[in-house]
Image (cartoon, rainbow, N blue to C red; front, side):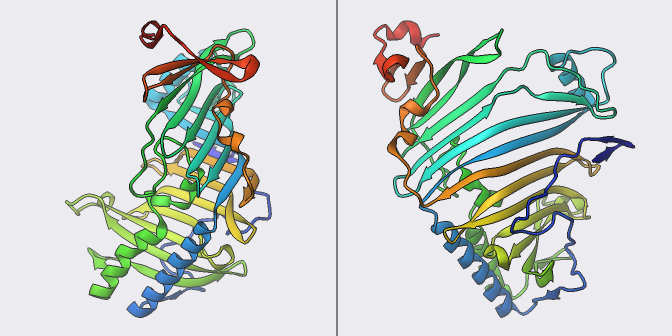
Length: 388
């Protein structure tokens, strides 16, 4: 249970599975009783090289990865946002609550073939969001939400995205979708296809590969010995918790060049567990004065010698320290380095229905899906359809 202004509502996260990883209790950026600071620059360099190497080795072992995850996202809407949600999306009965709690559930399926550079993802929300009065737990209803699906197929030559275009109002099911084919583009920091929902983002907190982010720190330590500024210091600790050995990294950074207020700084504290192949098990990002802003939590399973996420959690807090967004992914299937059939990355896997359109924006052509023989037929009167 989670308490908001003295009233209990449904707790967002309940972890009961015996997975590889730490408990989700908070940890401090300062040393705990069982932790030892590693202050010698050569020792710090050795630790960062160890962590980066082990993380990269684990990541590079993934040649194919296929799986499914149950995703749950919770939002706490307050102020004008709560009022807008109440009137626009709920049944709008009675007084508008001060805070509205939103629950979203979806199934995420994916497949990645690294040598072929193919990525397939499918996010499906079969049920509408639930809206609750955050103070009482009362269900506020939902007057207009519909199921939603986003399917992506990325290759070196193109990105395919299919989304719903029409809904059956009686059955509240997707009646038709539309796909588009555009040139694929890669993120320069990760090499992932943009807008593809590549599941490997779980290995790249902060928007880049951890071993890449360590390179800057290693260079600075080798040049200066220590990283210190405005009363903040880059630190590394080693410790043991629940019989698990870990390293803890405290990484301060400047986010506002005025540098005269606590919110002009952020401090990211990271745990890397030996039992998890030295992969990250938790991040906490705080303001300079310790106010919690964001958390990331990982729990793993080891398959074919590869550590893969089993549970992944993101938490975001407002300036008052209240949890306002939480996303939990529970992987119910993980298959690594197993053959993936070619049809997994086929146009036929876009969940299109009869007469759905595929807009090829690369070649300026339009195709219509024929469900009876699972084929696409080119539309001849292109200009009439293209303008719709």
